[in-house]
Image 1: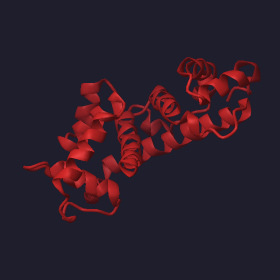
Image 2 (image 1 turned 135 degrees about the vertical axis):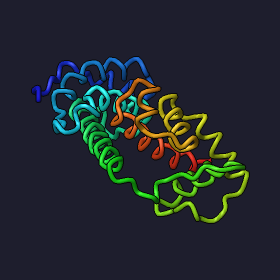
Image 3 (image 1 turned 180 degrees about the vertical axis):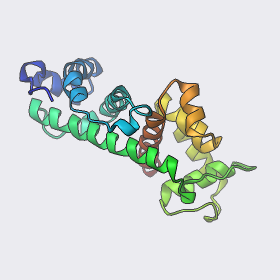
Length: 202
């Protein structure tokens, strides 16, 4: 891992980023990207399915979505915050690849008429232990879910639509989107997190 580069992370830029200045945040992310990438260690077993760039891209997107939650606008706090995001994303990407090898039937979204896949997805988001036999979801709840899905960042939305609503395999989705399998699993996990948050707010 590269040593901390305090000069590359300006406190005033961090303050502006937290206040909603996307250009300031982009500058900060460009400055810290080499340090974050050099700190990533991916087991050789997974290197064909997951690239450090996959983790970095999703981590930057998460930073744009969540920068307002940074409590202390200092270089040290920003660096530690980004490293936590990267570490969590690496962990979840690897978990997704592991699940690919041993599918969990509880994670299966059942496709069918009248928005069955959306109903099952909503049940799973509200209750992680839900199964396809979960209680029926009202039509207005399904429409609310579809509205929230449309508000997701494009990469999150596409993965949810392909994997959850169309029941397509991660490999197929990865090929279509030009992403690795690990990236697709990570995008889906982060998209589900975001959906849960938005559903609680609506």
